[in-house]
Length: 214
Ligand SMILES: Nc1nc2c(c(=O)[nH]1)N[C@H]1C(S)=C(S)[C@@H](COP(=O)(O)O)O[C@H]1N2
Ligand SMILES: [Mo]
Image (cartoon, rainbow, N blue to C red):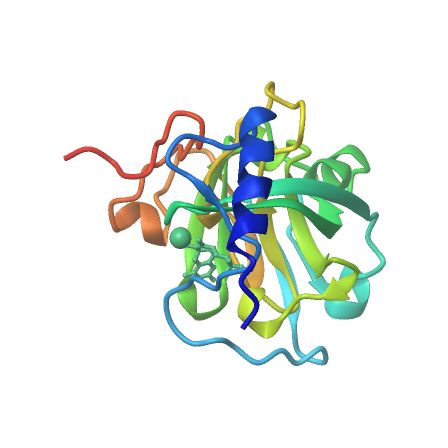
């Protein structure tokens, strides 16, 4: 095995000096896998992404249709509530804001929250402002490659910190659902899987909002 601990510590010192290491986090050069339950299989023939709730029209995109949607690239620092952070990760996919701006999703004024629905009934909630910001992406590509099955193949929500964008809310990584299959827009907030299990609802990494009090 390589011993890259010195390299890791140097990298960590650098991002800390740049003000990019949130409190209680440490830098990893790996990409740990974290989730509850099994990894689903991807079948491009039957896969779809559905959009419903507080929208003017429901949507359903097949895999081929999803790949035709407007695309963008985002570079982000990822912060996991279990205290690892991964820096300068490169994602490509579809921005929710672009779908709304281009009329591909028509939100009702009552749409105040997004509930991501993943395989096996997993859910996670975000306020609409966070879901529509540039640091939340419906990602199908990581470092120029399709996602690993463990990391959400074919599609996941991903949320992180964009350098210099202190104006954007940065939640912990659990706020992006792997194996994403549905976007439900809600008038009232609804807790997702980990939020019901006691994780913090807002999950701001700079404020260390890891767990709900109680
Ligand atoms: N479908 C699904 N998505 C999920 C989870 C899960 O249990 N199921 N866990 C979340 C948690 S707790 C984390 S930390 C990240 C981890 O993403 P990674 O495995 O790509 O590092 O996925 C999030 N998305
Ligand atoms: Mo997590």
